[in-house]
Amino acid sequence: MVDANFIITCYHVIASIKNMNQDQIRIRYLQDKTESYASVFRYHKEHDVAILHNAKIPSTIISLQLGHSSGCEGHRFFTCGFAQMGDFDSLNAEGLLLGEIKNRKGISYIQLKSQDVSPGMSGGPVFDVETGLVIGMLTKGFVLKSSEKHRDTAFATPSETLKKIF
Image (cartoon, rainbow, N blue to C red; front, top):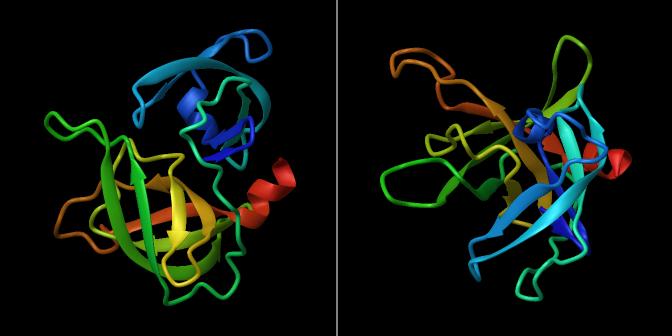
């Protein structure tokens, strides 16, 4: 997710960086096959959010508008991410927004239902198809057997949380 010179992603995507204050992160833009480097601007481990600063975002990349996740229950969503499948660099996914849910620590998430969301898509924007706005960021899912309940369940960090951390 990009806004001006900032990129929002999941903390666990960049967690292997040894020195968050000094190390540069290589960013690849699939749209125009360019690369640049970003630094960690801010992060929040508990909410699994990282904000990167990049002064050289290509002009071909458009900023995404963050909307509100409240009232999204029952809407369809669209997302994309870097799940690995064959020789594809990225995949699209869609599904149903089931609404806000809190974990045992009281952290809010949007519960998603989708057969398409898969590992590698973390940090992807969650577009509410009805409003056309980004209402969250893909954060976590579970790899379950096809016979298990909730195998199509994933979670997104609500846009309200992203705005607060930013």
